Image 1 (cartoon, rainbow, N blue to C red):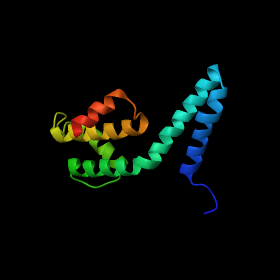
Image 2: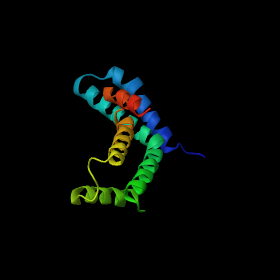
Image 3: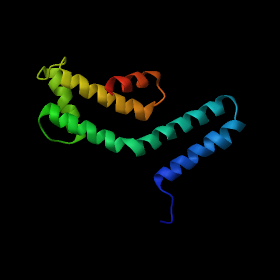
Length: 124
């Protein structure tokens, strides 16, 4: 392959921001560069993990709702079932699904969030 992958491009720009640009920047510009580096970290983790997380969420939704569909369709159906009261908001199955989905999303978005360690230990 003669061109870098999306992952390689994201990592290269993030590395540049964190290791070359940020040490030379100050104030508001440094803050924006840090925000950009953090955003690229999220993109990098999404490239690594979102496929597996989406697959797991889809499998849980199929079991929970007893039907097939896309991730978007099933999430809409879940919301509708909760809103209409056809799915018990207090059910253990729903709680486990929401816990796992939230944990996966936080692992991608904010893996250093202090509460994620507790959530990991609870699910183990």
